[in-house]
Length: 306
Image (cartoon, rainbow, N blue to C red; front, side):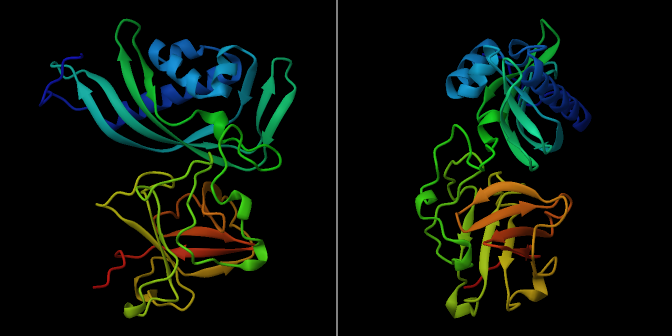
């Protein structure tokens, strides 16, 4: 077990964390694309074994049978916890890293033939632990708790690869049905995984005795796909009648399509699919419902009623 100081002499700076995150993600995507510097450089041996066992695409990448060609950018990160040596040297960091994948990302086989391609921008959250390899002067992934890039990349038909379908997939609501207020429809992420209420809480109809029946309340994390933070609640509202208008941080609006630059978060309950516009998440989120889009404003203060 690594030694740990209760009160290290110095804490890791934001600049150091940004450097660690950039190095890890850049090296990971370089390994996805060309095999260099190689997954053995990016992962610790035990973490690579576990990740390959969990992800068939990563296993084929490790065997040099396939490659992922994708331009990426880091959209944000959260430091959950960092552990230190007694002298203050950081040795482990628990991180959640948001990565945007540019349109045109491709999975190719050993000959370069395209197996699948994504023509929309994608957003992937890497939940991982980074460990300092002092002998080689580098940070490595020591635990990857979310699947690697390729598991979230949709095929041309739009079906997520290598992930089980959401429970509602077989009974999806046709676009002509419009908004469905049922709260018993599970929410899933872009990997087809069902999400618990640690990640999404949805109330399709507001509390009747408070006069909120026409509104729908959505609680999500500080970034799409992240756990809900009770200290900084992100409460968005579908509010066509303006019940909460005095607390809107943006206007409720109906649009024919997602705004330019909108990113599909992958979060959906089969009726509502959420989109994020970079720079707007603190004020609003966009909901694709059938053949129209609604801007759901964030509330200044989370809704509450006795």
